[in-house]
Length: 393
Image (cartoon, rainbow, N blue to C red; front, side, top):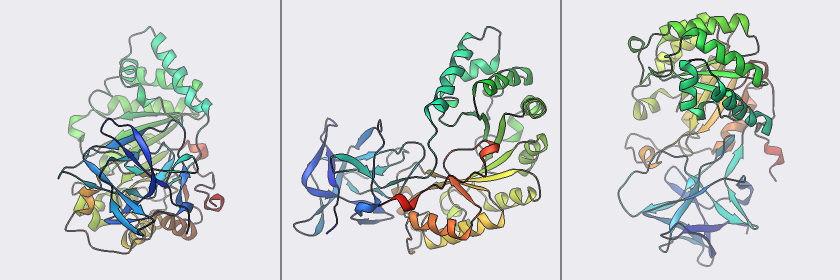
C-alpha cells in the first residue's frame, strides 16, 4: 500500500490538527478518491491554511478500507501560491445548502512531517529581485511631487504593481484611465528603469465595461508614445475578446501580446457556465490577428473535473493549434465547485486528470510554451521546461 497523507481538520476556533489514523481524500468533479503519494508536493512556505465552516471532511479509513465522513471538525484547504496549479479539489460534505465564496479551493494533508498538497509548479518562480521591483517603484510613487492622476490611482491600488513577475496591471475602467497620456508615460517610463523585464498589462473586462462608457484616447496615445520611445517595456492587452473593434484599437497601437482569458474553449461549456462569453467572438478576434506580428497567449482558468474532461481536452488542443497560440497560461479557477458540478446540463464524461492533459498538449504541440505568469516579449518563447514531470518521483 502506498503512503497516503494524514487527514487535516480544524476545530471551531480554526485550530488545525492532523488525525492519527484517518487519511485525506480529494475530489474531481463529483468523485471522491484517495490521492497517490506521487501526486503530492510540499506546500510552499508562507502558504496560509484555511478552514471551511459548516463542512465535514471526507476521510479514508485504512482499517475499514473505505470512505467515511469525519464529524468532529471542519475541512481545511489552501489557495496555491502564484505559479502553482491544483490537480484536485478538497473532499467534504456541507452541513448546509450554501455556496462558498470564490476562492482557489485546494486540498491539503500531512505526510513525512510536512504539509503536502496535490499541486504542481507550472512556471519558473521569479526571484526576490523581481519581487523587490514593486517596493522600489512604490518608494518612487510616494516621493513623486508633481500632480499626477496615474500616481494617485496606483498608490490606491498597490497590488497592481506588487507582482512577482515585474508586471503592472491596469484594469480598464473609469477610475484607472483618468490620467492623460503624459502622466501615464512619465510613470511607466520610470518603471522601465526600475524593472529588469517590465510588463504593462492592460486588463480589459468586456463584461463590466463597454466602449461607450470609456474614452480610450489618452491611453492609446500613451501606448503609441511608449512603443516609439521605450523599447524595454513589453505591453500586453488582456481581454475576453468579445469586441473586435476594441481589440483593433489596441493592436493598431502596436501592443506586443494579446492575451485571451477563458474558462473553457468548448462552445457548449461556455453556454452553460458563462453565457455572456460568446466563443464565436473569440474566434473572430483571433482570426483578425492572423499574420500579424503579435504574440498570442491563452489564460485558461482550470477546474479539476471540468478542464480535464475528454471533450474539453480535445477542444483545447484544437483551439491552441487553430489560432497558433504561443503561450498557455494555466490558472486556478476561483469558485465553489458545486456551482459547476451540480449543473444538470453538464454531461458525464471521462476525466483524464490535469497532469495527463498537460502531457498530451505538450506532446501534440512541440512549440507551445506553458506557464502561469504573463511574460515579457523577450521571454515569450523561452522554454523553461515547466511543469517538469520527470523530477516528480
